[in-house]
Amino acid sequence: MNPLTQFLGAHRLRKVRPPVPPVARIAVTTRPIFGPWGGGNQWLLQFSRYMHYAGYEVVHDLGSGADCVIIQHNGLTGAMSIGFDELAAWRKANPRGRVVHRINDNDVRKGTGQMDALMAKFNVLADHTVFISEWLRDHHAERWFDRSRAHSCILNGADPSIFHPVGSAHWKSGEPFRFVTHHWADNRMKGFDEYAALDSLIADGTLPNVELWIIGRWPADIVWKKARTFGPCAGPALADLLRQCHGYITASRWEPGGMHFIEGAQCGLPLLFHEDGGGIPELACKYGIGFRDNLADAAKRFISEYTHHRSAVLTRPPSGDGMCLAYREIIQRVLAEV
Image (cartoon, rainbow, N blue to C red; front, side, top):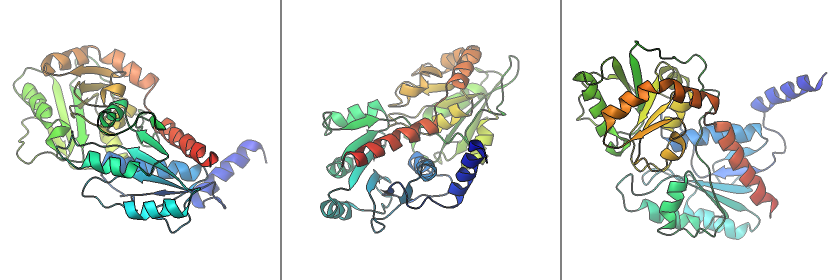
């Protein structure tokens, strides 16, 4: 049997049965949800699959002999499978155990007053902290995080086996130009004021031959004029809808990092993004243009520059593979340093 055949055979077996013994056992403090849900859940699903293929076992409790714990928050109201007191006791009883804290939220974007404090509380248990954007790192550093502590900034990436540009629509001059956005939450901070404004610009003729697709949820008081709407969806169904469009618009404000626009970019859609998007512009600026109070002009310019931005997003798109590799390298390092 040649080496390539052996490799492919081992890869198929790994999908069916985890290696025995695993390289290490990783406990994540939230459980996966299968279906349309927020970016943190999409990260968890992808991370778990990747780590499994890399020879690790991923669990969601401390009773399985964990070597490393990933602190992943599930919002202020979402339950965590491992609480603070339980994790603190585990650390005390397992001095060789290591903790990596993934910080993906703050109070600014949700208008809350407890999220930053929650992050700070859990972070005292961490050996290494990962922020999902430099903007989010700086936000917490201004309030409580000590920059001298071990930390990294790892931008999000979506699963490339699902979110990819193969078969995506390519806009040609004279055809309708189709913008799209999608959000699981109906929080107004996701940018629904700008999406409604874009809908009005299309309806009143300011942006002729332009369409808008809205996927997911939106505030109940918004009555769309011209936008085509779709209910929440995830995975291949979502990717298929995204690939039917030409440009992705995100007007989310003070977003820690976000996954929605990345899923769009990986499907081959250049990005029209709000400049007050928090961590979003760190990546989005590579694949499109920003706007603040000039939406109509920005949309026209975006369409006129479509070919350039489309080429950029196809040449070097964001990657879930690269994101997961970065997390694995951190986990390897903290465990090897024990």
